[in-house]
Image 1 (tube, rainbow, N blue to C red):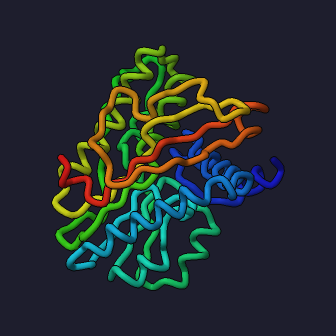
Image 2 (image 1 turned 135 degrees about the vertical axis):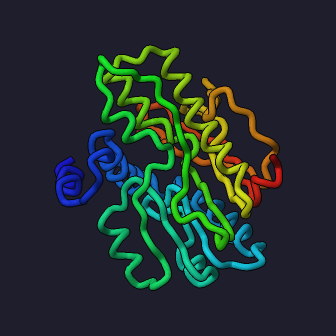
Image 3 (image 1 turned 90 degrees about the horizontal axis):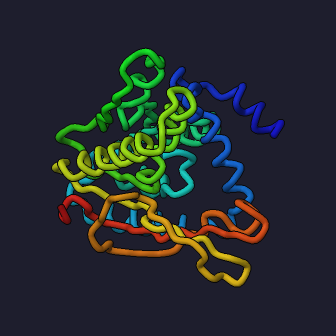
Amino acid sequence: MIIEYFKYLTNPATKSAKKLGQLQEAIAMEARYKRSQLQWEPHLKNTKLLIEESSRQVIDPNELIVLGSGLLLDTPIEFLAKYFERVYLIDVVHLKKIKKNINKFNNVFLIEHDVTGLADQIIETTKTSSNDFQPKASIPKLSADTSLVISANMLSQLHYSPVKFVTNTLGYDEKKQKKLTKEIMLSHIQMLSQLTCRVCLITDYKRNYKDERQHIIEQEEALPGIKLPKPDKEWLWEIAPKGELSKNISLTSVVYGYQDFKQLN
C-alpha cells in the first residue's frame, strides 16, 4: 500500500483522472498483475497474437490507434512499432514507467484522452444540477491515414470509474447505474462499428465464479444487456485466482476476440 501511495503521488494525471479514481485504478492494476502474472499470461499471449494477426491483414499499415493501452501488458508494442508508420497509444492515464518504456520508439506517441466523453461532464456536475449524462465516444488522431483501431480488454471496464463516481457522489440508484453502464458500452461499440478502417476488438463477455473444486457457482454478463456476434477466437482469462477476491472463490472470464469487428456489423 505504501508503494502504491508513493506511485499515486509521483505519477502525473489529469484532474478528472484523479477525481474519478482512474490514476489509482491504473496503479492497482499494476499490482494485481504482479500478484496474478502466472494466471494472466495465457490471456495476455492470446490477446497479443490476435492483435498481430489483425495487424498483418492491414494492406497499408500507416497509422495505428490503440484504445486503452494501459500498462501495455496485452499490447505487442515492439511488433506494432515496427509494422506501422505511427502508433498512437490512448488512455486516461499513462504511468511514468510507460512513458519511459516508449521513449525508445520514435514513432510511438502517448495521448491522454477519455474515450467515453463523460469525464468532464461528470466532475463538473453537482447534486443540484442535471445529471442525465450522455456518453460521447470519440477517438483522437483518427484520420484517413488510420489503418487499424484496437480496443483490447477495455469495453467491459469503461463504465467502472464514472458509474462508481456518480453512485457515490450523486446517489445513483441501481436502475440509473445499469442504464449508464449500458449506454457507455453501446456508445463504444457504435463508434467502432462506424469506423471505415479495420477494427480489432477484444473483450471479456461472460464471467464465471468458481469454488475450490473449479465448479461454477455463479455466472454473470460482462456486458450486461449487450449481445455480440460469434468471435473469431475465444479463450479463458483467470482474472482473479483464488485468494484475490476471496479465500475460496476464483473468477474466470470468457474472452471474445475479433480480428475485424467492423465487418461483422
